[in-house]
Length: 399
Image 1 (tube, rainbow, N blue to C red):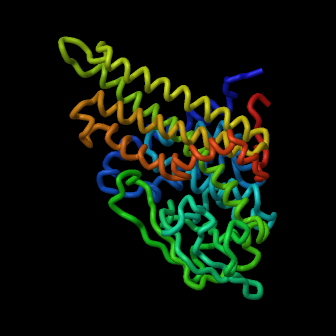
Image 2 (image 1 turned 45 degrees about the horizontal axis):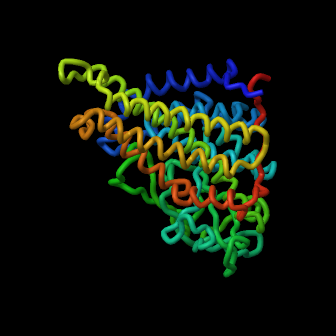
Image 3 (image 1 turned 120 degrees about the horizontal axis):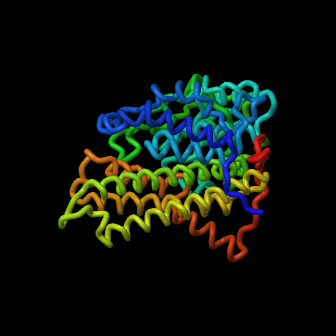
């Protein structure tokens, strides 16, 4: 039986996030974007108080105990207002905290996961490097074991939450080894000597966010901060990417909705040829395509969420959802600008910001070209279901 209804608790959560974003953030986000000013110092404490930074983490580890569908609903509502808000959920909640829940030891969860789920500490994720994006096996950051410590040297770039994070999940290659089997993961505290960060400016989009680089110079990390085993780093990184891609897809659904709502509103307000432009068939065609993109993307996200709720690795499903939803989000933003005409090219209307923000989502968490290859490799039988760890969320819809 297929049931698309939401549980009462999920609806209440969704509505509380919608109320928060419309009341606290929507009135100021345009000004922050024009100033390229980060929202994070202001909104992170409020999101922590709301309980959504650990929305899908079990209550015993400081979270709210919801499932993956609830996580998707939160991401949709956040990105409906601004992509930078959803980035918080992708990086802090999905890439970092969710991955800690799946792979960390009891002591690591006690020390790092609980405060992050409660929102008193912020986590980030460091995989991408200047010479390594999709080619994960080519990591240049090195880790060398020395007694009860690992010494890390290298650089990570395009890291979100870089200025506000307390802890990073950092991936490196052990010693001089090459290839996937040499990759290891660590919990690295920002306060460790040798860790420094720098922010990037003049980005095309997500200007109310915080993105930059991490420099690691002879950083000594306690051996107890190794995440998983030395042989499991690549699996951990891929598990984290599944978590993150799911939230990017869910956020893209919110981006589509924002473009559709703005275009619908303008189609009623704008008059041409003696009538609302919404009466014109070519405008209606744009609106219809945007609605189709929203429905298709949401269904793919819900399907991926259902798979994840069963504790089944969801690489193919999250990849498909991310690929299609972000493409539809870019298309919807483009159509919204077309409906607005010259006004859509102006920063006075939100569709211009939506277009810039949506463009980034087709690149981050694996470019959409990579996701095409992932889908084809599954279809052709070159790729099998990976044995990635996927814990079953504590909360089940309808229970």
